[in-house]
Length: 250
Image (cartoon, rainbow, N blue to C red; front, side):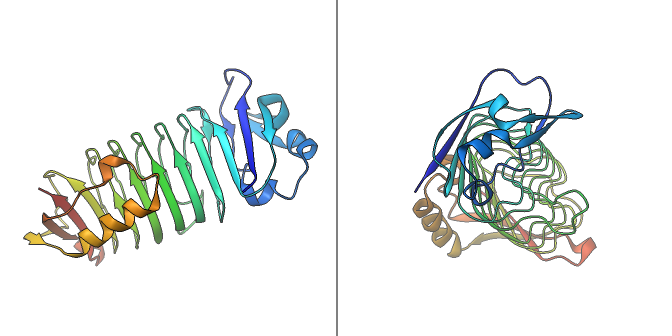
């Protein structure tokens, strides 16, 4: 598979909208055209070639040097792979429908959520985050997998409709608010929202199947593995007619 590598030339001077940097879009361009592609920087624009050193060749994969001021990394990704060395900013992977977004650092708010004005969030693909994430990860998620290696901020899976969200660290406040379906998996007890019914301790065989599947994917954070055996199962958010699952592995 052809890989396009983008390395930052220096520190960013403002927030950058990285959403145009998608494999399927750049695969149709020459290196010269990619270098001339404008990215929004603050209230202005900057050419890709002025921001990054480019190497390799455009195709099905991108290797990107990360920065916490790079927003919308992988937003709208439909196929192919983006590998980020380092952190990302806000709204990484929003509106994804396919492909794989791997982030070796942390992510700010709204990872894998809905695009601005959108009614649905992620509808397919995988986001594999080694570090922590901010608020509202997986907002309005309808399908796919988001694996968070570290802690998750508050309101994880806000209005989630389907999909899987294993959290290797600690979930934040109001996890699963407005959740209708889907699964959130984590270790240890939490104080759930009132809309979640405690179904007691359970042995759920499907967790072993899920863990095997995660091991076969590659790139899944190690902290998201091994969550099998006895779990406390919480169903909700009943205030929204939901039957999503919070599975606390004990």
